[in-house]
Length: 490
Image (cartoon, rainbow, N blue to C red; front, top):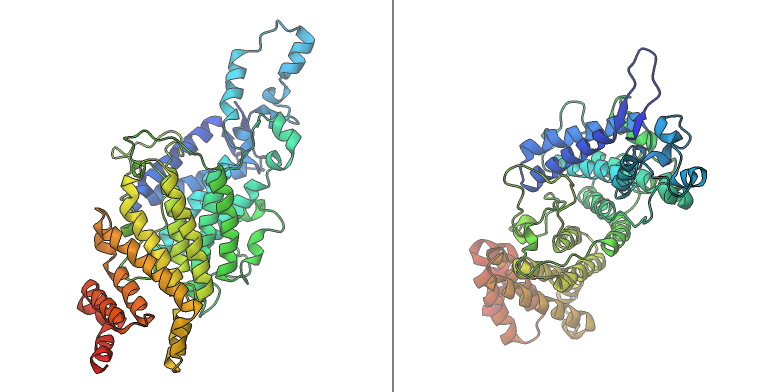
């Protein structure tokens, strides 16, 4: 069993961590994710704090905690019994091919080979990411001494991910193979949450754009016993987060897209049985603080209900249960939530189109019945953003009296996008799930399309349909009353 021990300090007991501690940490993280997925924040918070506390202990035991679960090869320079044990090759050379290597050592090596070298950093970073999403919803959830801003947790998560990516077991090919990592494929889970963390920071950039950056340029003075101090001490001397302060939301989204591309490429393609409902699988949950543009619609209303483990028992492997459709849906939904709020129309269209491309990938997954309503509504949102992107400039031209702008290529492209949005929203209304949520979005798409329609009769028909979908309150917000007055005067 691999054990790591920090150098003892005078008058203090040495901090240790072994393989059993690693298994306990994974179990603790599984329970935290299960409770988060079930929206049980009351139980989630103490579990996440316990995960972060344990990860901090691991860091104090060794600057590279992966040595705890990757076997003795990493401890080659150590004088521990495990590190001094001869390799298979030496035993074969010295004692002959008939020598049988102890079965318990074979078992230990088989046991450790399935772990990614970045497994610890994935757990630590994801726990910090989830804490940030909770604090983003309710800053009072932070205890005294804990950061009460979500960006502090998200920036720490980025540091943890980058530290994990720069582990010697990943950057030194020969040493990695000697340590038992025959397949150093990307840790897709870490890449996905890395990207999602960047999306959260981009969303913060949008929210604070009229005031200041959502996080300071300088590192806070963390107490020496804080996990954030340990994270800062372990990260690379020149980290990528240094450029985030001056980056725009669009720039941060580009960084997120790079991580998503890595994660999606290496994400498994499980073959579900015909009766399988992919929506019921556990996942790294969506960030509920990311809200779409429409005030009547929330992120959760566009996705099937999460199903945690009803008995409170989480699987021993925190990532054992997996749904590729849900992961794709979560990624695209969060990107779309930021796209809807970007101030630049061209950038809104770009990221809505990126989200649409991810939504389209879900069509290739097995048994999409459970996703039909949410996916159709989400694609309608994507097309609404793309179709609405040039509308502001077109409407300004119309106010100047340039009626010919409605015949331009930009206007035609906008009408095509809005028509697609209307089509998706109407289909979503007919689906069993999510239908009641798309009425306001459908009304917005119809109203915007009517404003860009040249034919008077078609325009009047679109306004009437928009009013039926909107209801009185939303009709006033969208300006449909003024549209009716204009039609009466004509």
